[in-house]
Length: 324
Image (cartoon, rainbow, N blue to C red):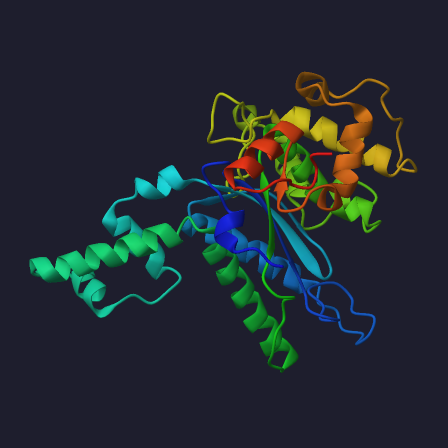
């Protein structure tokens, strides 16, 4: 039985979530459709552009993404505090970038003097919008509806494009965030659609590598540590506005993991564990199992057994998959 979304998205437990949407039946999201012979590769760009636009409007950051042929993955971080600190005017302007407003809010924006009852109504409306602007369900609804409309228009058809509602996994600890991001970034390699990270098109790891190389080869080396502005930056666990790992450590781990997943890749596999795994105390076998089978290893909540037990207790559940 499907669970209510409010029971799956618990911002008090974690701000990080892994979201997946899959096309219905044989509908093709991107790439070459062997049944119709049509090439839908350009739709990958639609998705990347749209979820980056939404992240500029919503208080939701993109940690990782991968756009595949009939589904896509997003690792998102909800910044509830940022949304709660927006002014009334900022909430209104953000909402109007995506949706129509109300007559009263239109009048407020025009600078009309409203009486106390009208202003109370405006304030109540703005608070509803504020809550929606850090709501993953509203983020994903906007994203999927936009892509479905564009795809149906291109296919000259109507009807459902996505396979029901999106699926989500709450990432309860640092290890879950790290392994899920790696699972997402290595999707094309695992599916044998790419031979290396640089060729993994429409993934966050490719975007980060390209951006990093561009900065390091630039004559202006003072910006070499900068990262893509539309992706959540890597930093440290002392800064909760960044992914709690260093970028170079993550890139090293991604290369090492990719070579284990596809041993035929060029280059030798290092016998030493990457720095992140040593710091987190993660065994090699456990790590490789997680990045290859993350979706099957966990259900709606992912994390170490202790985190899963605690979350299950908070939600009055007896058990979550992954505890063992």
